[in-house]
Every structure is written in C-alpha cells, then in structure tokens.
Image 1 (tube, rainbow, N blue to C red):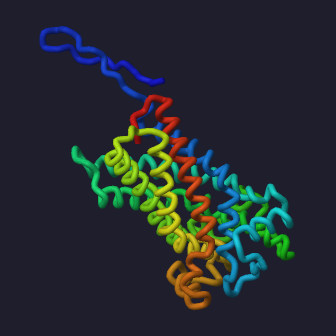
Image 2: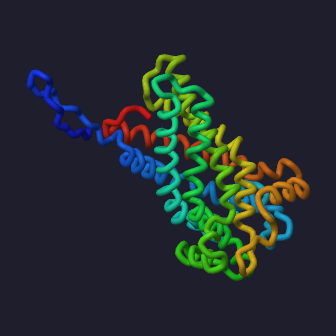
Image 3: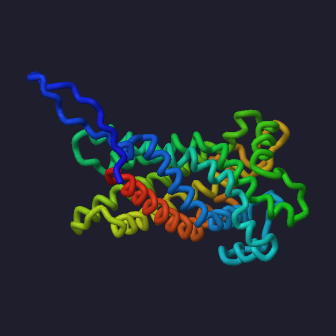
Length: 323
C-alpha cells in the first residue's frame, strides 16, 4: 500500500502536459517520525522490565546513599522486585519512558537520515560519515528528551525507597515534573543531561551506525534483499554494540540523575559526570562502570530487534523505501 499524491507538472515546450509526479507520503519526515515513535513504543513495552532492573543494579554499592540493597544479580534483583513490590512494578515509570520516545526516537531517526543524506551526497555512505550522523542525531535527540528521562529514573527508584521506609519523593509523572521544577527551576529538568547526552551519543553510535553499516554490509556480501532476515542480523549487531559502548555512560547518567539534591536542586553526591566517574572508579573499581551490562545487553538486543523490524515492516507496509 503506497500513499501517493499526484502533483501537477508544468507542460513541455510543445504544450503537452507531462505525466503527474508521484509524491510518496510514507517517505516524508513526519511519517518517518510517527513510525519511529510507534516502533519504539512497541519495543519499550516489551523490554521495559529489563530497563528497571538495570537501573536498580546500577545504584547498588553507590557510596553515601540510602539506597543500598541485598540484591546483586539481574535475576535476583528482578525476582526481588516481583516478590516485594509486585509484578506490575516492573513497569513502574513506563509513562515517562513512552513520553521520552515521543521525542527521542522520532528525532534521532529523522535527524540521522537527514545527516547521512547531507554527508554522503551522491556517493555511498562511509563509516565515518555514518558515525558522525549517529553521534550527532543521538546527542540532539537525547538533549531534547532529557527531562522525561530524568522523571523516569526517579520514578523507577520509588518502589525501593518505600520498602526502605523512606518518604516518597514523587507520586507520579506529573508530580515528578512539578517537584523537579520547584527545586531546581526549568534548568533542573536537565539535571544529568551531560552524561545523558554522552551516553546517547555512544549508544546511537553503536545502534544507528552499526545497524546501517551492518545492513548494507550483509546485503552487499550475501546478495540478500532488504528483508526481515537482514533486519534481524543487523539489529542483533546494533544491540550488542550499543550496550558495549553505552553502559559506562549509562551508569554515570543514572547515578547523577538519581542522587539527592538540596533545596536549590544541587546534587549532594556528585558535582557532575566527571566527578561521578572518578568517585565510582576509585570506590568500586573500573568494572563498576559495567554494572548492569547484562540486562543492558539483554534489553538493547531485543529492543533493537523489535524496534528495527517493526520500523522497517511498518514503512514497507506504507510503501516507503528502505531506511
């Protein structure tokens, strides 16, 4: 099914009218944006429990906080959440996560497409051009979506705070937004945005760039058409690369965003991402930066698979060209 519009064409010099030019709505920026948000929402709903588990793991062992826990592994952490808080708590914070994708996923996909088109011109896209486009698209998208990410992280930790007898900081998505603005003003919504943007740059370098390069490589070397099999292979490569490159920045981002703040919104544990990096490594060792790597990988693998297959399938159904 192809959504097209027959635009009127100017007549030739001899007065005869040219055949109408077909305009494919499925290839427009707005349609690509909407499809990417839908595909990301599908992937988020299926894999969100792993994101919650990952966040809880990354807080473990954090010096100076009240959020210490006896759980040390991914399965034990997930099992503890189900046993002590209920299975539905595995989706705690899903609302701001979906809000985030309304901005983040749409912007990163259309921005990457625009950047790679601009960089390659009439030639084949090179690896460095794809890398620049991936990093740039990730940074722009994440900076715009950072407030929703901040709210998501804080809501994810509320269940554990209640179990420890601590007063809840927030009671829902809208309340969290109000409290953040109350404490730190509008700029407070971008607390942790620097490590957040750094993480997004690395994750999208792994995800967007790897998917794009792997997809073209597989099609070129195997002769396979632009099909679900190619999408699955490329998305599996993208998921692993994104997890490997983004986990350290993700740990720093989570700790900076989750730390308690004073009345002015200033962090009480870390001065910034560099300070958090130094304290984490000095207190817990280098591999503390890879806390939660397994659930990150397990989540990003299926997330990338579901997202890219859904994205490509919806576009193909609408009659769009291959991404």
